[in-house]
Length: 429
Ligand code: AMP
Ligand code: GLY
Image: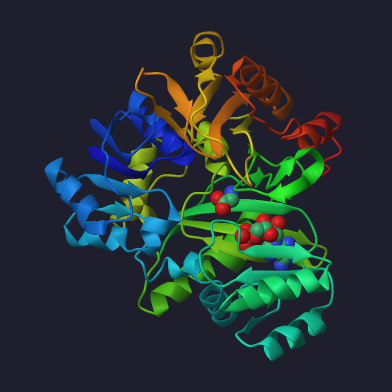
């Protein structure tokens, strides 16, 4: 089949890498892509947010009902890009704009969860100052204040400072104020065709910019899988209590969700709670999760896109672990600097592949054909190994070969989980 991937970050590079390894994929395209994706797919300069332009590209590339479009990021999904392609008769992996509201509106997600009986933090949706003050008072510190719309990870403030919580709430048009959920976080992805739900392996990401979970929130600075500290029954439990009821409720409402359902979970002392849903693969967890998936990816995504998941064979995973370390540009996340040359890519390809490799996030080729930084998160260095400690070591060895002026990365990705796994104590990172 022919596959067209929409997006241009490290998640899309991971998707394209896996798709390029699938023997059923005859032609691989990506729009807009980046400098790394261009090595495994034909890239096309199309505006990912423009559904008509994406549908036109699919047609121009000759995609038909037996091919596949995969939409990576949330913004095109919320903008209805999957709908436009589906209307053009090409199967799409990615939900409709209606179903993507599960990510696009926190209030909508809360309503779905309430109806479906899915465990989540108690919350209030507020639009007036009085409502905000009442809600903050009802919950007390630490305060959790979430902008209702899509905010690229910047809409959520968690703070002990009442004035800061109040200021953020009043700056939002509509805000969700929520109970604080204590406990480690887990990202669990599931592929669904709107009826059948197939969970992937759980992962954990690292949202803060600096070691020890210090510094500002980011889009994610690293990830690992599996989670040696998690209850082996976690995935089954989340399937039964969260994923399946949510998919069933969206189908019941007449807006079935097909694509990737991402549950951001808190494992609290009172049980599993949903922190948020996303309507797409998470970044950077996808880079680690796909590194261990042995089932050919295109067949899986195509089965979801065409409603055939019930007949799909069980997923196969490699034993062992995968770790992803994000290399971020100078000034990320506040004021990322771009245009800096990136060195060491050839060395990693020569000395570390295939067990460690570099996925590109914000990169492009400059006029001289050099790879330069083009965004805040620049690279996702990913490695596999028989255990977390080995995967970590390989990932950091590859990171050390990369040169990017002023760049920074966390040095503690999967550190605690690897140490706990080695000691057999099963602690949590
Ligand atoms: P989100 O954009 O919804 O993923 O939120 C960003 C981050 O804020 C999450 O990954 C959590 O670390 C934190 N967060 C969100 N909601 C809560 C909550 N109810 N309690 C504690 N932390 C939260
Ligand atoms: N890993 C966080 C996200 O993709 O939203």
